[in-house]
Amino acid sequence: MPLKNIHMKKIFFCFIYLSGCLINNISAQSLLPLQKGMTVFTHKAIITSFQAQSIDIVDTRNPPANGATHFSNWHPTIQHFLEPHDEVFGVTIDNKPNPNIYVTPTTCYLSTAFPATSNIIYKINGTTGAVGPYLFGSGPNTIQTFSVGYGNICFDGDHNQLFVTTMHDGKIYRISVTNTTGTILSSFDPFTHAPYPGTPAYAPLATGERLWGIGYYKNKVYFSVWACDEGRQNGNHNTIWSIDVDPVTGNFIGPEKLEITIPFLTGVTGGNYSNPVSCISFSSVTGNMLLAERTMLADNGNSGFCWDNARVMEYVGSSGAWLPSPNQFFTNATAYNGSCNISPSPPLPGTLCSGGACYQSNQFVIASGAYFFGSSGLSIMPFTGNSLASADALNYYADIIPADNPGCLVTYGDNTIVPPPCYDCIGSFGPQLNKKYLISGWVKDANAPVNVTGYTNPKIEVQFDVGPNGSGGTVSAGIYPAAGQVIDGWQRIEGEFLVPANAFKIRIKLECGSGSNSQPCLFDDIRVFPFDGSMKSYVYDPDNLRLVAELDERNYATLYEYDEEGKLTRVKKETEKGKMTIKESKNSTHKK
Image (cartoon, rainbow, N blue to C red; front, side, top):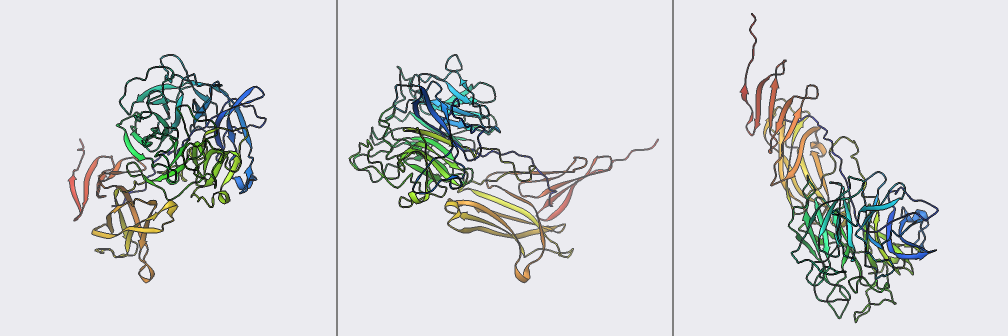
């Protein structure tokens, strides 16, 4: 029995995270509040007029419409910000209408001029640009970094909290953003180890206990483990792990799970290694994961001019089933000849990432780096990737001056609240790859006679666009006809389907025949849920709010009938054999 249409209110968030930075405004032109498509970008502190600049807002909206061309450097509008007493690398933004920005101190720039001596996490007001400590560096509510700085930071809009890694203790911290200052809610230690003594004291590298990149997606925190780099080619693999997050409380509910083993560089001889992943982000369009590496020769960085052999990599799939994407992202078409690369072979071209990369909606992938086209700043690549041969013809290069040692970035666009078109109904549905689902519904032929015993024309078909951005075409996962008893003119449709490993988009087609067999028909109560799950639906009378129907996991209804006084008089149940009464009662009032 079909349900009445019910609108269920739900606000859903799409987030994309990465690193970057920002601080007190020293530019004549303000780019606050942030607009969709703008990028917040960090780099090594540059002394200008006795002031240290390390954070920029870059207007990366629609590059070709704002003067960007291929095979050349682009000079977009930029707002510089002052250094907040520490050099900073990690950055994220929240989901406020005017997003606030959170940044973390670092030692990855090999700098002694502005060491990350504090444990402070800074917040930049998204409207005014005012800067201040958000998580203070002293007191019981403190993360001790012991002068080695943080790894990175990300925002979880489902639970209104931050996650941050440190280079010192190998832990992930969970921080509330509901107050004017941050509060440490809990921490998670993914690997067992003893405390690290001394100052500075980095978490061990060779034993795989040093964390850097971090990102949040669908009730999971993903983080990177830094186990090797260009300066320490020890044969260990850098890795990506995840931790589950409680959907209600937002707390960690581990244990940690290995998701990706980062492949060693290919085409580089003399050592089995890759550089560490410093940033992790996710596409709200495809759900793909984007990873950015940063060239490191030592615990606290490199000489400042070593950018070769640091990649931008995309993975497709979901937790437990991530695979390398067919899309490749080359930051540019050449290598940097002045590199301090210490491998015996020449450096790899197109691998000049300096630690930051994220999606800009479904338009671009933006990466930080140096010497792209003789410039330092941002490589703006097509959303669907490029090739080494086509990189300079497809990329845009934003020259950010001064930015000789780029850091991380975050692009504002995917992290906004996106209400459904009707503002009063369920939002997006995202089935998991390689998972079996059950689809069901009810159909009625509009012109069928009263005594009809079944329908042959109506069907439901489930299709998937497969491959990167659907480039592999459309495949059918199943066609499901109506079957079973006709109940009050309605017949049920039910079927199982498996989501392909390379699925990009799902399509559900409602068919009523074709050509001369085409007939008008009605569909209702269409439901999709995991095969190993259970689902119930409820229908309420819109006038008196009484429960009138309850649909079970097979999409059969239990119907409730009431008298004029609102008392339950009859309960009917739909089954495979038809409708039957399972309870009936009569009430009467005797007159005196």
